[in-house]
Length: 89
Image (cartoon, rainbow, N blue to C red; front, side):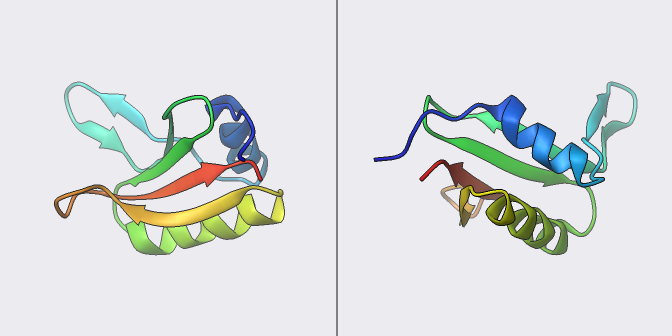
């Protein structure tokens, strides 16, 4: 059974590996980068905003797996955004 996980911990792994978080500007929209979202006590989702979504998600997957997280590439229902589904084994 997966253990409790926090978006801030996943965010810290990506930031420590040199990745930039995305930022929302009301005038221009999302700036490119990663974004973490808590999805319950045992899941965090990671998104990439901007160009290079598939390549960036693959890089994030490799870094997070190296840090000991269980990572599954996923897509939101109905053909929605790609994301990484992160849990703690």
